[in-house]
Length: 162
Image (cartoon, rainbow, N blue to C red; front, side, top):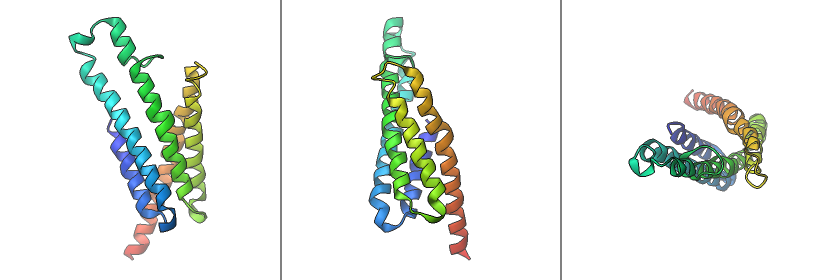
């Protein structure tokens, strides 16, 4: 849950950084990342608080609601957050960046979004192993893009301070 607000804050910083003509894309990325963050926080908060209550003690209810096994409510919402909202945010982030020094970061955002979107295919194909492809997008590729972009923010900040 702690990483969700950080991802939204990063998107807000990106939105402030992109040129005015691309801000509609970056603002849309902020909105979709916020939706991802809200859904993922709701899922994990519910698991942490409600799953321990006697009301949900019946194993069949607990599995149907809280298990990270398909099908369950928690798993479906997690897929919505990370394989639907997140890839849209990542793709919009990539689209909001111009050329020049951001070219690598732009393509990393796009790759992250496309990989995460592949994870969504696990639902209609009833193959949750496809989600592992999506996980590569948001656990490995997106953080790399974010670190490179943060370095770019830092370089720009140092130039403007000088």
